[in-house]
Length: 193
Image (tube, rainbow, N blue to C red; front, side):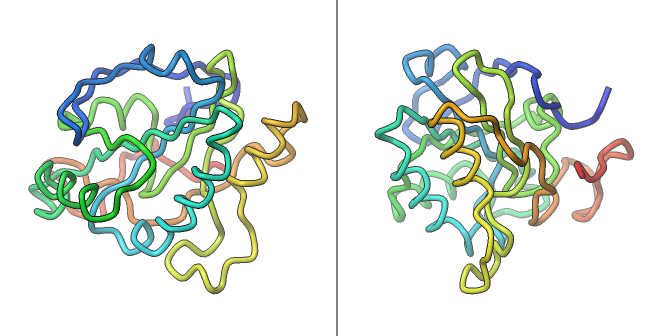
């Protein structure tokens, strides 16, 4: 089996605490037709650089019943800024239009096969994966952006079209795994395309 969830595979359940103090699981989003789950964090320059484009995309597709859910799986022992308190602070400061969940054990990052921050997973109405990878081609400096793969995938999905590009390689920092060097990635983790 591939490290990262593959196209057509179903969304994996979770039970994670959010910065709003509530605990969420996959079924809590059943009232939304489409679901975008993305792995992110507090400190990564690729996340910080592209968060406003992600916000625009989330706001654009909200009326088309697309729900965005962010998950931070990074070990705070690698980057202190990635701890839960900093997550709460970041959401308070930026008021992002998504829930921000904490994967403290890193189990969900492993089950989904999150490679980098950010890494996006788009699920259809049956919660089957239809797109995975990057949102844009220049997340650290959006002024140089020429492709918005996430926007294209969501436009096609919400229009009932086939997704033209189902996989791209996420661009960003690797997930910070507990007890490992900050640049370490699981041996089976590899490029998606």
